[in-house]
Structures are given as structure tokens and as C-alpha cells.
Length: 104
Image (cartoon, rainbow, N blue to C red; front, side, top):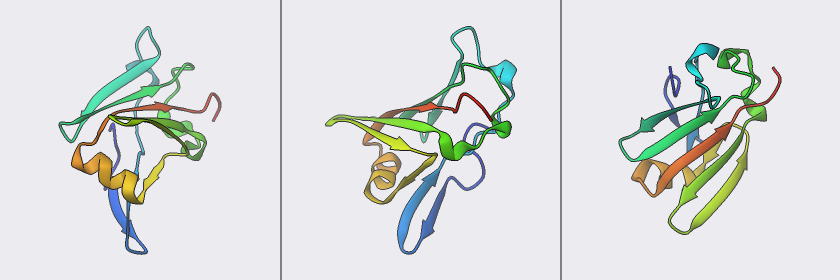
């Protein structure tokens, strides 16, 4: 539900992480967010101010911030590729804030 099927794939020899949450709007509490522990190392927080069902969104319009020891990186969309996907998988990314689009 929180991450989607097969979050890690390989495309053209490159590791790809795709976030595809299927969460009902009621799961987003008073702060309009829902969090989970991914791979036991990375806290992923979805921000959903409209508290809409996530399957109604065009997730390509998501904005993500990856929090690492060496700083933050912003990504447009719901896909993390290459070295950054490797860093998520290896535990070098401590948190991901995923800001879901404000409209479907």
C-alpha cells in the first residue's frame, strides 16, 4: 500500500525506485501526512494536504526531497534513478519527503 508493487526495477542497466502509493485519503491524519519505514532505514513521509486517495493523483507531479548525511536533493516526479536509487537501497538516504500534487 505505501510503496507499490516492485519498487525497485532496472531500466537500461540503471536501478530505478518508483513510489506508487495506494493509500486512502482517511489515512492522512491531522497534519495531512502519513509515514512509514522503508527498508528499515529510510522514513518516507507522504504529504497530502487535500487528504485525497493517492491512486487519484498523477504521481509524475510529485515533488520529493531526499535527506542524506551530505545534504538534501530535490527530485520532480515519483521516480529516483541511478546512484540516488542505490543510495536509498543501501541506507544512505535517511528520509524522503514526498509532496503529492495538490490536484489529480
